[in-house]
Image (cartoon, rainbow, N blue to C red):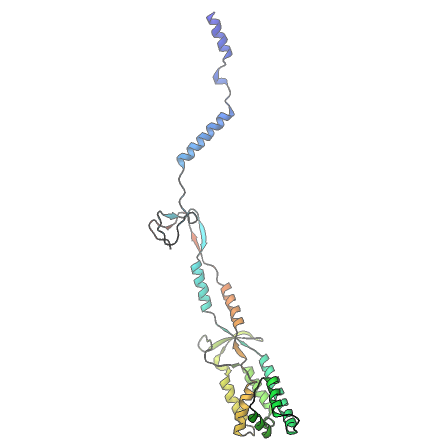
Length: 287
């Protein structure tokens, strides 16, 4: 009887070695194994520039190390190169040919108005104050009544060869007239950098240009060749200089364009940092 019961129990309880294992069991075992392995092999990552909370003036409590190769811009060096580029820049002067033509037109018109007005004045068709107003409104020139009256009576402007005057003024203008040589930005000794609409940008010797002092002296020499009294020459010269203006002047616009071009040629300076490089050691001050 006991033997039969043992045989029935064996039939009802199959051999455990042949039973298939549960997939959930295998999954749990694998997860446990991976977790254990990760825990054993885990090494905390070293600090990087982005992760540190250090500020300028702080003292580093531990080494700060680059975690991976990286390239960063050296803004200080880039700005230094930009400053050097601007310091080496040469200010640009502009040659204005239009001032020559406008001066020629105004000179011609001045002589026409003075000669025609003189006739009206002598015929008492035009008063002295009316003529002064005409000159002020048309040319922006204010003449004292006594000086104007003296020039009209002496017929001063009829004694001046207008064509010779125009030719001389054109020649001076084409050579280039500076307001003054004093204070001009020079490079390479005695040269200036200027822009001519026909020739473009080019250097030129300062001595190749006139300034207003040169024009004043040359105009005085020209007037000495006409049949004018000394007082007439002294009265006429400042009036004529009003129509011979500097046509080589410093150009803020063209200089700014050169600055932008120079800055565009300055490339940013980049620094290459390799993985593992210590950029800040423990105990160093952040700057």
